[in-house]
Image (cartoon, rainbow, N blue to C red; front, side):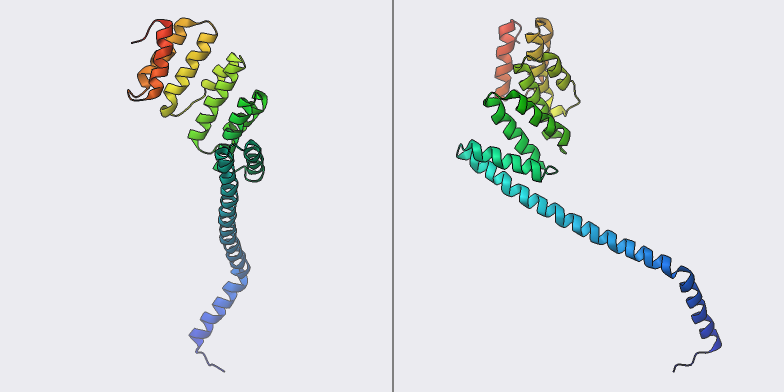
Length: 212
């Protein structure tokens, strides 16, 4: 049995007293930290697994598009949105499915998918793209007030010209030719000179008699 001098024994007794007083609290803190680390690791594993599962379904969508297999695209998109809604792949799937719905004449479902994409997109670029597509669908449905409301939303500078061009379409459809011309001109001025989209806007301006 080890022998300790008085000073060592006092230190040991002090440690025992301190541990009896604070030991439970320290144990709880250690457990909480350990659980936090474990939870973080589990979250990362879950996220990786989500991304892997979503990427497989998105690949199926791409293959369906290449093979013009709409059934496969729709089924894979539905599964992706249902099972992995928190991934960027799900938003892309919603955009693709919405385009197919619109082309098939189902603008109601297209609108629902695009609204979902806007609400769930974590990347601003995807959200802006979904807004542009939704505005285009609304214009086609002649729901012009709703289209303007969508186009009024804050968006990235890179999308300015596209938002302005669609705004011109809405204003022209409402019969406001001067406002439409101004919107088209602003869109035209913001587009790069080498952009093929600039030619389309120029045609719209030419039709209104104010191209430059």
